Image (tube, rainbow, N blue to C red; front, side, top):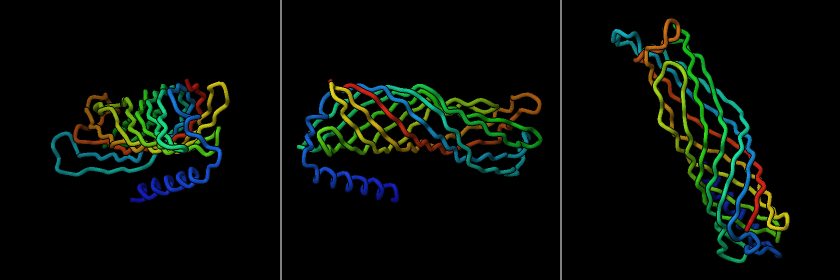
Length: 233
């Protein structure tokens, strides 16, 4: 509910800007565009490691360890889209983006008498989005972006491999026209991904095993800030 309230509040603010724009013209921002993006990404994993007892089928629930860990990474990418004018000051921007790079987080957990490290890595992020956009002058616009992001996920350690992630993206930003078709976009937002859950394989070697009765889970949340330079055809 809090997230919905935030989105509605942002839309209300953007609508207010569009109503007070005197020189704004949505056609200045309309059309096909392509951009190159540089982003700073912060990844947070709210995780839990639950030891399921011994390998012999103990009924013990074992030990539960929880915690939050994070990592900041820089990634680069590209985007392409089409902005469609729907009124004098409003557009609907539809596009896709791809980000190369990775953010890796490693956590050490104590599983019975063994020290077992587990690493989660997010890489090759792809996004499809729609962004209601409001022109606030003949060279500047602001927008709310809503989209779906997919990310390749890999793990290292004595655990099974999870499925790739899918999450919901919410962002806000501005777009400034620089002349001769060039523009600059700045944006900030977050992505709330699905939960990751893996199980121990019990095959890590002496001192590195994670019991097959143990699980490691995490709830990934990505916050980002980006700047793009692009060209509108």
